[in-house]
Length: 119
Image (cartoon, rainbow, N blue to C red; front, side, top):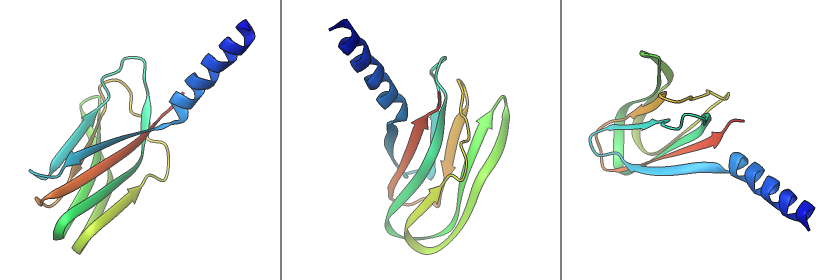
C-alpha cells in the first residue's frame, strides 16, 4: 500500500511539472509582463497566442528580462491581423526574477501565455 501511495505522489509530481501553465491577460495598454517569482521554479514559454477584437496593424514584440538586461525573443509584424501565434523554438529558461514581456499594438483583445515547468 505504501508503495502505491508513493508511486501516486510521484506520478502527480511528474504530471505537475509536465503540465503546461496557461494565463490569459487583456491587451489593453499594449503590454503584458509575467515574472517568475518562485525561488525554486524554472519555466519556459511554449507559446504566446493573441486574439484581437478588431484587426490590428503594427509590431508585436516578445522579450525576456534577466539580470537587468532585456533580450528580444521575437518581433512579429502584422497587418490587419486578428489572431497571431508565436511558438518558442527552444526552451528559454526563466528563473526567479526573470520576466517575459509582450508588447502589441494597443487594441482590445487577449494574450494567452502558455508555459511549462523545466526540471
